[in-house]
Length: 285
Image 1 (cartoon, one colour):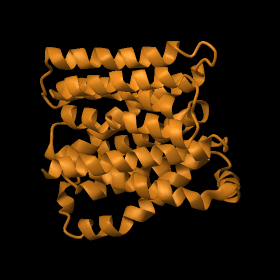
Image 2: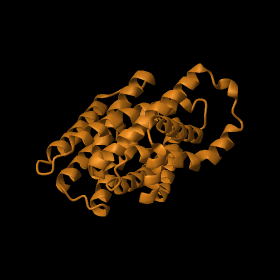
Image 3: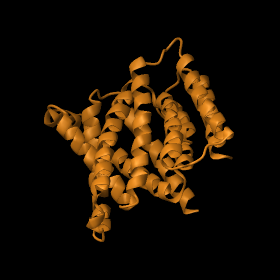
Image 4: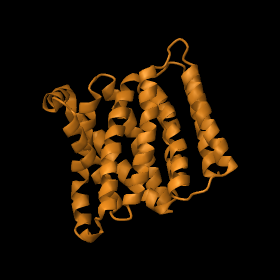
C-alpha cells in the first residue's frame, strides 16, 4: 500500500520536473552550471529533514564500505546530472523520456546481479518492447533526425541513473531515504563544483538568465528522489524502477501539449504505448 503511494508521488513529481528542465534548457546552453545549481538547491531543500534524521545515527556504522558507496553515489549522480541535462538541450522531453527508459534494462541487470532478483520470460519480452520503442523514436524522424549527441548523452545517462539508484538502495541500510536523497544532491553538487572551471561566473550567468526558477524543479526533484528511494526500500528494485518509468506516457503527452513538441506526434505516441506495454510485461501485470 505505502509502496504504491510513494511510487506514485515519485512518478508525478518526476514528470513535472522533466518538463520544467526541458523548458529551461532549450534556452540555456550551460548544462553543467545548471546541474550544479539544481543539485545544490535540492540539497538545501532536503537539509532540514536530513539533519533531523541524522541525529539518531550510529556513526560506528560508517565503515569503509559505506564511505565507498557514498563516494560512488556522489560520482554517479554528478555524472547523471551533467549527462541528462546536456541531453535535454538536444532532445525534446517527449523524445528523451522514451530513450531514457533504457535505464530499465540496466535496472533489471543490476537487480539480478547484485540483489539476487530473478528474471522471467515475460520480463525479457518487456525489455524487448523497450528496445523497440527506442528504435521507433530513433528511426521515425527522417525529416527531423534525432541529435546523435543528444541520443548518446541520454543513453549514457540511463546507465548512470540505474547505478545511482542501486547505490541509493544499498545506502538505505545505513541511512533514511531522505538522508540518502540529501547526500545524492549535496555530494554530486560538490563533485560538480570541484570539476567545473569558472563555476562562479557560469552560475552568475544562470542567475541572470532566471536561476530562481530552478527552485521549483529542485523541489519536485527532491520530493521525487526521496519518494523513489523510500519506494525502493519497500519493494523490489527490478519492480520499482520499471513502474517508476511508466511516467513516460505522461511526459510524452504533456510535452506535446504544453511544450508544443509536435514533430512526429504519431511516432512518439506509438513509442510511448509500446514502452507502457513493456513496463506492464516487466512488472507482471
